Structure formats: C-alpha cells, structure tokens
Amino acid sequence: MCGGRRAALSIVFLLCLLAAPRIAVPAECTADASAVTIDGTVTRGARFARPLPGGLAFELRPLLQGWVIWIGDPARPEENYAGVATPPFRGPNPTFIQGWHFRNANNTGPNAAGPGNVNAPQHTRRFRFVPDKARFDTAMETLGVALWPGDRGPAEVDAAREIYRAIETADGTLQITDLELGNLVAGERAWIERAGFTLRLWCAPFGAG
Image (cartoon, rainbow, N blue to C red; front, side, top):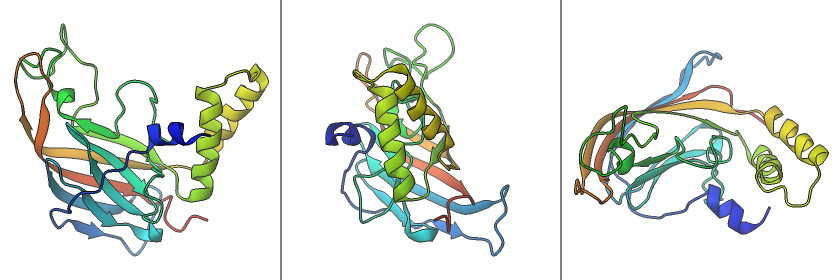
C-alpha cells in the first residue's frame, strides 16, 4: 500500500505534552476487565502521550480543530494501530475528535437531532486497534485492496476483506468528560479549547504476539 494511503490513516503531529494521567494495570486481566484506564486533560495545540503495556503508547495528536486518537509503537509514529482498525474509513470517524462535531452545520448552536445535524461522533468514542506491527501491516494491505480495488477482480477483493475481518483487534473507549469549544462563529468551524477525558482499553492486545 502506498505512502499516501498510509498517511491518510495515520496523521503525525509533534507538539508538547500536558497533564498527568492515572494509569492502572490490574494484576489479573480478563476479557471483560479494563486493562488500562487513563484520565487526562488536553488543551488546544498540545499533544497528550502516555505509555501502554506491551511497548505501545497512547496519544492524542493535535489537528486544526481537535485531535486524532493514536495507538502504536512510538518508534513508528506514522503507523496508527487504531486508525487502521476503526471504521468508517470515509466520513466522520470516532478516532478524530474535532470541535465541529459538537456544533450544528452552520455553527450557530449545539449539534442536535433534526435539520443541521452534522452526523458525527459525540462524547463517547468507541474504537478498535490492532496489537502489533504484523497485524498492522496485514490490515493496511488488505484494507487498501478493499478500499482501492483498482483493476482487481471481485474474488481478490473478497479474499482481502475476509483476511481483514479475521485480524485480531482490541477495544477502546474514550469518554469526553469535559469540553470547552472555541471559535463559535456562524459559518465557521468550531475548535476545541480544552477536553477532559477517560480512556479505557481492554486486555486483548497486551502481550499479544
């Protein structure tokens, strides 16, 4: 899969760290238990980064109007293990947290059901991520075939989709607990000045081969 497509799923921004979170890793990890919980606060333009078990890291990487959720190997910052595993891959995605998601289409009030709704994820962001580079590479390759089939036949595309669906992934939830928006100007796009959050990741990925 070419670098342009990889970049479309993995966005790299390097800025300062903020806020000290709470990280809890229980001695016994079961399928229905939270393996990692991180509470934090991030402000506009800042990067939030903390280590995870298994040599991975969690980051909120700044965008113009918010952040993107990033999980991966810090040595390979261009590879987002969450970006490659969390649909939809066209349209608003849960891993992108932007101010306009919380405002109506013309930025004159909060996003609400009915006319002007922007149909974007809200305060609860559920996502998935692959546990290691091997599965990341497989996901990138097969997802590329599924999204950009080119001259490939239906059988090859279907086979790629089946391989992609079989890749081991883990679950995460980022709950926005406090949100302050800026640029509340009609006809423009709001941004996020500050966000408090709780991140929960489940056990499956840690220690995976």
